[in-house]
Length: 188
Length: 186
Image (cartoon, rainbow over all chains, first blue to last red; front, side, top):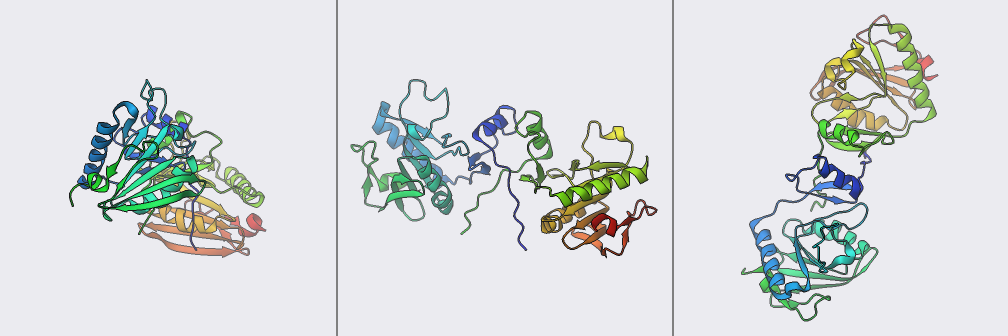
């Protein structure tokens, strides 16, 4: 007979308290997803390079129009605080010193996936939609493509497009900004 | 392809710290199993009655020979802390003023199972064995029997015996005490 144990789930406040009192430290590469503290997958050099490319492209082209947040927390709900690879945030004078950005501050959220594709699609994406994040891109390194998810509904995104090398894409928040899939992925 | 992420597991020290700073409170009925904080199953009336009976029986008959700890914590290794329904602990009492009892302090562990039988057998029993708890009883309310497990090995208990309503069970540490299964479960 299978035995399932009910996990004690934590709120964002409890999760922050763990960091304050040193239960979680900077050595912990973790996220809070639905009240569970989960380890983040190891970042390959290929994954890291795509994050660096995105950071350079977005910072260079948007300037002060958005804050580019790299692998920092977004407070999604009372029970989830993920650390997406790249997020474009609505600019604020204090750079979110007073509290982590929330979905309403999030103009575009990007996850770079090599081995983590099923997790990003199956676990994180529905939570981003439920929280009302207006647009998510998943960079599928192995598949040489970028998936664009728009129009969040409670159980997912209504508009999904997969763009291959040779194609380009623009965030809804910045229609004048165009990024090529090849620019994002780099040379093959 | 697996979607499940790796959970951040906690040590017993981190778990205790959560209680000290109020992240976990008295309202939390939880145990730490292999670094995961899990909710305990609710206690029904029959389950509670069995614990009351056993507590009273052992307190009355053991006198100073052992301490009776109902639903108290046991620290079992680096990242497991369980709260069995009852444990008999080596004296003296003061030894536990500042430290949660560990394997070597435990003379007998009793788990009372109504809905939790498989959880006790599959999850908890192997951990008690691996941490060298010398004797475990599982009181099977539905099955009207008491299972006695002795001789722990890293992979489980070597001796297992199931005693039905017509029998008696005695702790190896106190062979003079005889618990009537019928009185406990009848």
